[in-house]
Amino acid sequence: MARRLAIVGGDAAGMSAASSARRRDPDLDVVAFERGPYTSYSACGIPYFVAGLVDRAERLIARGPEQHRERGIDVRTGWEVLAIDLAARRLTVRAASGEEVGEPFDELVVATGAEAATPPIAGAEAIEPARTVDAAERLRAALERGGRSAVVIGGGYIGLEMAEAFADRGLDVTMVEQEDQIMGTLDDEMAAHVQDAAEGHGIRVILGASVEEVVVDDAGAPAAVRTSAETLDADHVVVGTGARPAVAVAREAGLQIGDSGALRVDDHQRCPGHDGVFAAGDCAESHHRLLDRPVNVQLGTHANKQGRIAGVNATGGDLRFPGVIGTAVSKICKYEVARTGLGEAEAAEAGIEVVSATIEDRTRAAYYPGAGPIWVKLVAAPGSGRLLGGQIVGVEGAAKRIDVLATAVWAGLAVDELALLDLSYAPPFSGVYDPLLVAARATAKLI
Image 1 (cartoon, rainbow, N blue to C red):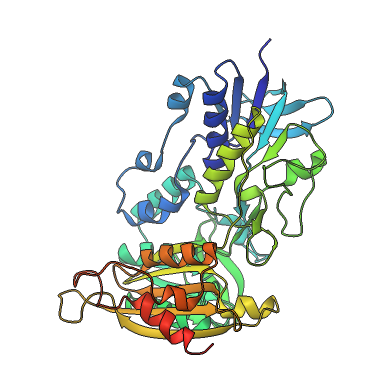
Image 2: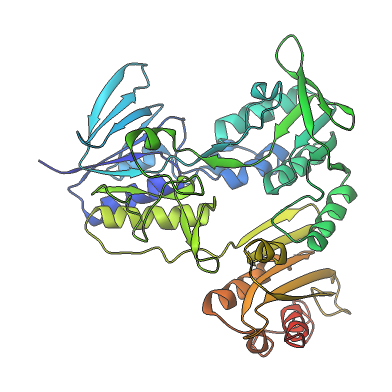
């Protein structure tokens, strides 16, 4: 009888694991349980669908359930895993019909993703997080029914992208952030440029205010948001205060939870102490190569890689996940925003001494049409000059430069080496000295 690999969760990590395992072992019985209606979808594309830049939700689906089935994977959408019995190698699953059934497995990949970390705000439970494609469809339908005002609670990546989506639809948008800056993953002077872009797009930003209540009407729809500063009209509300690993079922099964709140795994995505059990994606920890400790980084890039590694290793392979350095990119209104490695504030929190320099330049040769501002901040070790991180904010053409910095951080290059890298040049793309080289030279002078 064929061995059976069960996958809990049908998005990036889960279906990458299923596909990798199926390719390696065509005789393997692979079954994937997904409680929602979609598989392999782009959650990162949801703000663009809400804004109307993407016309149909189906375009966010990389590979639907039927496509996976055609490849020999038994995908069951609308099926929710309620419990995992590791000793008996058995799942308790609520089928789409509502019936609870037992499903055996030989190997297991837990890929349950993350869930909205809704703050303890009165009325917030009435707001559905727009984290899945079906939830985004419901939000867009509500927007198309009407409304003039929107409030976004939280000023991180998702909050800013959703605020822009609302503004693009012509709504009066207010963002409320309880900290003293938006986009807390950036250092404050870089975040200030992002705030300028948001406000220039018509988004009102309120900092240092806590949300005390989401006021709902008799039908359960939002009507207002009451903050410590004022009460805001709100026909639509999005809570963008972050997400936490969805690990409740795994915790109850006895799998180890790390300090980050995510499932503890080794570099082969194995769950310690349980042979044949793997975890991958937003529910799992990753090793941070600079901080030298486990972290929980929720990105589709890592989820797909970890899922593939889990699927290969579940079928007898020997792949390892080499870790993360915190590279991320986004577009916020008129600016592209990117970061990698450690920021100055993050390094200080970790007790790591650094030097840093920030420069302003142009994305293209100053005389070439379309040239615009770009700010680059580099963070380096004071003795060796090793590049530890970088942040970029600027107009079109700015953000993907972060990949050069990510490669340099990954490879352990020093800023004086970065300053002499053989980077490309033509007036439509940069000045004769790319802004990265200018920033590296400025940082090197401090060492």
